[in-house]
Image (cartoon, rainbow, N blue to C red; front, side, top):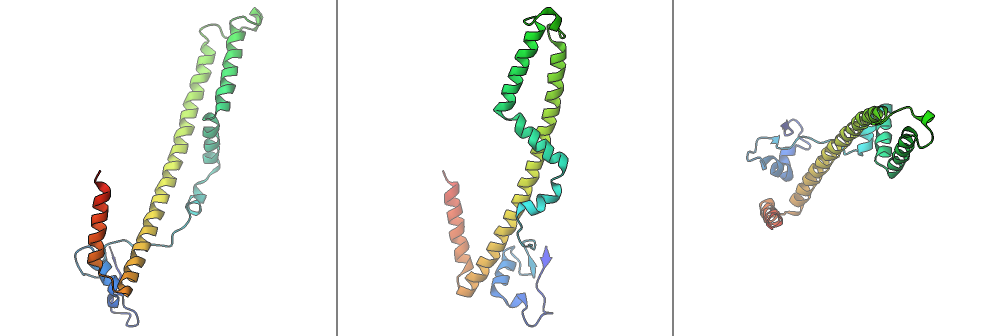
Length: 177
């Protein structure tokens, strides 16, 4: 809770503003304490994410992007076919280096799967951070819009209780199947 009302500023005391009194009363008590936290100017998410974009995170994103492509699937398919062909003797017995059941291939693919799953988790964590930042920015924008709307409504002499009744009805109608 943030106290915003004071009589220390005689030129423009928020208590003298009808819209601010409406915002103050939204929590059920006219006490000079906003029911909403203060806001800062909304920023684009990339400005906030800039410091988070470290080299290893970028590498993880690129690897994850490549691992989720058809190119990755084709490269691995060709690699497996060549590996198996060499090791079943299709090219000659001297080319065999990983006998059936291809233990070396299994170990390499298992290690690759471990690393790829880690890269995917790193990328998912970064996406979650982006979503959290976008959610915070959306909240701040919505809060700013709400405060502006209340001030504009108060300037126009619009009854906030009537508006809230209509909003409640509209919200209720959107929730009903």
